[in-house]
Each structure stands twice: as C-alpha cells, then as structure tokens.
Amino acid sequence: MRNQNFRQFRRQALRAGMAALVAAGLGGCALGPDFKAPAAPAAAGDRYTPTPLASTTVSSPGAAGGVQQFLPGQDIPAQWWTVFRSPALDQLIRGALEQNPNMAAAEAALRQAQESYNAQAGSLVYPSVNGQLGVARQKTAETGGAKGGVFNLYNASVDVAYTPDVFGATRRTLEGAQAQVDYQRFQVEATYLALSANVVTTAIREASLRAQLKATREVLDALNQQLGVIDKQFQLGAVPRNTLLSQRNQTAQVAATLPPLEKALAQSRHQLSVLAGKLPSEAGMPEFALESLTLPDALPVSLPSALVRQRPDIRASEEQLHAASAAIGVATAAQYPQFTLSGSYGSSAQTFSKLFDAETTAWNLAAGLTAPIFNGGALSAKKRAAEAAYDVAAAQYRATVLNAFQNVADSLRALDSDAAALKAQAEAESLAAESLALATQQYKLGGISYLSLLDAQRIYQQAHVALVQAQAARYADTAALFQALGGGWWNRAGGAPAATAVSAAAPYGSAR
Image (cartoon, rainbow, N blue to C red; front, side):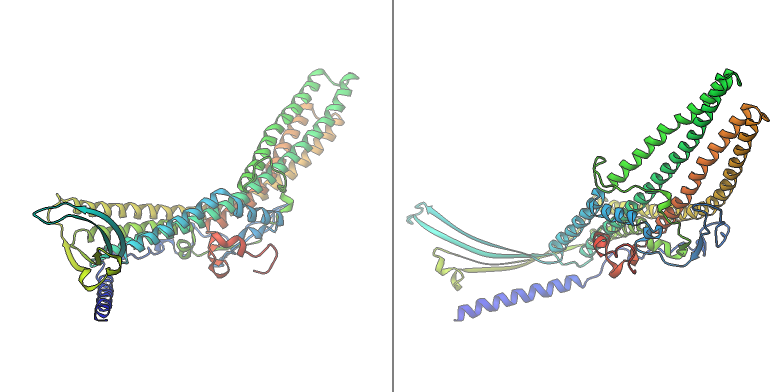
C-alpha cells in the first residue's frame, strides 16, 4: 500500500510540476513587434477618382441604355451576380463554385494550412510525452568468478520533455502559422470572387458575340439581296460589270467577318464549360443573349475606407504582412536563452509482475539552458533578414492596395464613359440606318452612284456592330465594379466561408 501511495504521489507531483511549467512558459513575454492591421489610405477621402463622378449615368434609347445610379456607402449583396436577373447565369455560377477544380484546390490548400497549424501547435505548446515498453532476453558471461546466466529484462518508462516559451518564440511561430491559415482563407475568397466574375464576364462576352453575329448576318442578308438585284441589272445591261464586282466584293468582305466571330463564340462557350468544371464536349450548357440579362439600375459603391477590409486580395496580402511581422519575433527570440525541461519515470525488472515496484522504479527531473554565445553574427543577420522580408511584404501590401483602388476607379470611369459612348453610338447607328435607307432609295432612282451606296452600307454595318459592342460593355463594366469592390463575401448568412457558401446561399429569386 505504501508503495502504491508513493507511486501515486510521484505521478501527481510530476503532472503538477509540468502543468506549472507550461503555465509559466505561456505567461512569458513575446519579443518582436505586435502586429496591427494597416489603416485605410487617408488620402483616399470619400472618392476613388480625382474629380467627383456624376451620381447617375446618361441614358440612351434601346437595349442596355437605362440610367444607372451610384449609391455611395451602400453594401454589396453576397450573391452579387443576381443583379443581372438571369436564372441561367445564377445556376451556372452555383454549379461552377461546386465543380471548378481551382475552387477545390483553394479549399484543399486551406485545409492543409489549418492542419499544419494544428501540427505546430501540438508539438510546440504542449509537452511531449512518450511511453516505452520493452522486453529482452539476454545472457551474461561469467566474469570474476560470478556466474553468468540467461534471464528476461522488462522495461517500462514514460518520458516527458517541454520547452517553456519564455521569450515568445512559440507564440510568434504560431502567430505566423495562423496568419498563413488566414492567408489561405482569403485566397479561397479571392478564388470564389474571380471564378464568379469570370463566369459573368464570359457569359456577357458570349452574349455580345452572339449579338454581333446576328447583326453581321442581318447586314449580310441585306447585301445579298442587293447583290441579287444588281446581278439582274447587270444581265439586263443596266449597270456595268465593275458595279457588280464591287457589290460582290463588299458582300464577301462582310461574309469574311463571320468565321472569326463564330470562332470567338465557340471559344467563349468552351471557356464557360471549363469554368463550370465540365469538358467542352459536355452538353447542357445554357446559351446567353444580351436580351436575357437585365442591366441593374442601382450600383452600390463602398466607401474607400471600407475597401481594404472588403477586397480578399488585400486581406490576403495583409496576412502575409502579419506572418512577416511574426517572423521578426521568432528571429528575435532566437537570440535569447532557451530553457528545456524533461522528466522520466520508469521501471526495469526481470519479471513483469515486479514492474513499478518500489525497488525497481527509477525517475529523474532535469532542466537545461542553452544560450547563444558566438555564432558569427548569424542570428543578428537572420533578424535583419526577417525585417527586410517585412519591408518586402509591406511594399507588396501597398501595391495591392493601390491596384485595388485603381480597379475601382477604372470601373467607375468605365461605367460613366461607356454609358456616354453607348448614347453616342446609338445615335450614330440610328443616323447610319437612316442614311442607308435614303441612299438605297436614291440609288434606285439613279440619284447617287453605286460607290455612295457602298459607303452607306459600310458605315451602317460598322455602326450596327459597334452598337452591340457598346451595349455589352455596360454589362461588363457593371460586373467589373462588383468584382473591384470585393464581391460582398462578408454579407453571407452567418459569415459562411466560401468553402460552404454554395450550399448556404439562397437560391435565385428568394429573399436575401
């Protein structure tokens, strides 16, 4: 009984001592700088552009010509692409977020970073405890008159080792590891935003190419009709052969523009399939037309002071800066002494039944200190290298912020300018159509030469295709603005991360 009580007392004392040492280690100081997130650029003020923008864009007749109003300070919906009111687009994006391999890779990288953090925390924060149990059969030789013999030897021991975090090396290491986890988390958000934006812009490009093909085919049909009339006139001798050749040349030139448009449309369809995580040969992909998209009339514009907290690329760069700051603390702590504590409790006996009897047990407690005395300046150099790495990360963070503000400024200017361009283009197309109709009538009456009619046809064809391109530009500008402002990931229900956002997102058309 006394032996059992004694063993129990020693185990409790050992556990209590190690717990006290752990607490003492965790309560020490942490060397190096304490990281603080950089503030938003003060120079940004309350606008993104050098001169204030109008509160609304201009309007124009026809498709995509509505007024768009800028709403400063208004927040962005989490599923921002639903502002285009296209169920097919919404369904395609939701499928892409589930099946795209880049999204899966980003989520796997996040899980890897989380488990790497767990591994480091497990090995650094807590004492390492290892048990050993062994049995050996051995023979000793006769020496000095002592008889040798064969016997069994049973060994059992528990070893404990711990390095108290007196100067914060462990905390700074884990701080840097957590920053890497957060970096990967924002990389997932960045992938989520880029993927959804790429699907939207590719769908808009497909719709634009489809509309350009339709416009070009309409022009080609008109030219073929005129070619039929001129061919009959030539056969009757009413027009010279060069007139017929000119019409054929004009018709052939327009027809030659169709294959590049068809190729671009096919490539856009292929890209949409890949973005959705499918092979280009797979069926079931929706087709998009400009008429199936609604141009949103209200455009939320986050305040400049909020942009640095909304853009996932800025937040990811901030976490890189955080990790670099923690690395300075690790390099600083390496210049200070390191304490180690260890202990063991075990037994060695020739029979298993006598293991841990009082006469067969042994234990030890040890403490050690390792202090750098001379290392050729290596530790100081590592600290300076860590400080330089922080400066690199700080410069990269600033570059990311500048690029983000440029993205927003470019998008706002594009929305304003392209609305004005569409208005001018709509007017130009209307005038070109009117001029073509008048020139066609005058040519039939012999009032103008055939070259004048060809000029009118060429001008209308160019204006008609340019109008379609201008209409598509307004949709693309709108998508670019939502992407530049961060995409609204922070407004998901319950703050769900991108990895679970697809299942948590409300379906298209439901209340959000």
